[in-house]
Length: 112
Image (cartoon, rainbow, N blue to C red):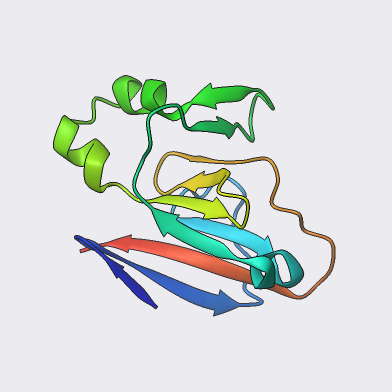
């Protein structure tokens, strides 16, 4: 479990979640073991959108959702071991969940 400003991340093993749930992220255990990290937004961050399969600027998603400058600075960005954003809790998933087997981990995000 990880506390992040006014929110918390939980790890739940082998739970089925709806694909459209942006509060949870399903990841293959092997991919997870390589490294999943949480950090702040960086200028120029891109996410491969799970809906359109195209690269989107995270800053544009923040603008579209009317995030303040403070909210942008403290909102978590989940990245893989190569520092590529894969999930913006409450906004979007990447299309690269890398689900290859039945041993999955659900990362759940909850705001306080």
